[in-house]
Length: 290
Ligand code: ADP
Ligand code: MG
Image (cartoon, rainbow, N blue to C red; front, top):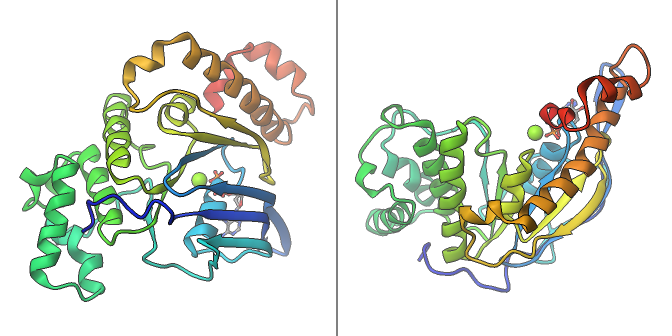
């Protein structure tokens, strides 16, 4: 059953010394450099870093969509060599089929796996219920708000009972109000399902609120700059964001990322230095670059 807790021992991602580069117009662009990281079974891990630092590239490699040059990539000790139903993927763009109802969208992956109509329906309805979407099972995507569409996207990624959920800035297109509701829904669903999540965001509060651990990446070529454990108890509640502990974590991650955003922008600045930039924008201003 999809909505049952997953096998607590499954869903271990291990990325070791991974390098990924692209050839574009005769030039080689290194997107990911010597990255080692892991997600333990049932763990919620975020990857945060400046725009263009290679986060999506790394996630696409874990999803099996992108080839890597060297290093190793395993899921439960098996080499990742392509996409598979052991990994569910959610992108920022809602990629629902517009001609299918919500429930048919969720059932699609199960249908591909040859699951019977009756069983498909039961599994889809269980997960839709968990996401508060059961009343909308017969709606079409065009009849839903952005937040609801993305919830359907998450439910669809979960339908085939993956060990791992890979999410690339899934709430990036949502307004901040909807976004915080989605974060709460996701943390609640994750708590029930206990599957491993690799979550990409450039929102520091979102990363802290959701995660057990956070990897901060450098500017491109992306390397791991820091690994931060989030000591907040579960279940997470929005009020936790107002605690001094939470605010201290925000400040320390902001500082790490600010250095990287400046480094990333440094190469784009015609005056050559970013000392002048930080004076002009002020110490907190660069956070908006994220
Ligand atoms: P992020 O998700 O952190 O914003 P990406 O992983 O999308 O960053 O991109 C990292 C770098 O790799 C960028 O410089 C981007 O232009 C480059 N890149 C990503 N995908 C490709 C591709 N298919 N071909 C060439 N360059 C790419
Ligand atoms: Mg990206």
